[in-house]
Length: 82
Image 1 (cartoon, rainbow, N blue to C red):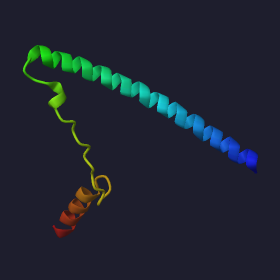
Image 2 (cartoon, helix red, strand yellow; image 1 turned 180 degrees about the horizontal axis):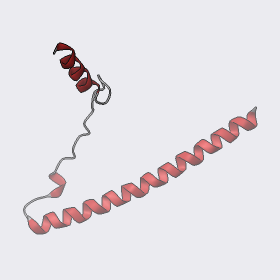
Image 3 (tube, helix red, strand yellow; image 1 turned 180 degrees about the vertical axis):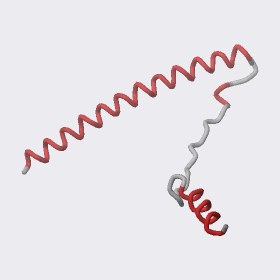
């Protein structure tokens, strides 16, 4: 029983380590891209400080209806009414 648990935990840890490594590389690339964009902004507008530009917030979409479900319901209702 213990061997099975250790094997599953080892596999999960390996998966998370891979994901952390990939995300770290992606984060490094994003930071490099930001540095390049900031440099171009400073060249084009010397009076603009790129650090003052706020980050966009992630849009939290509410899932009241499934994908295309609301439009499908509306169209079905319109078809029945005619």
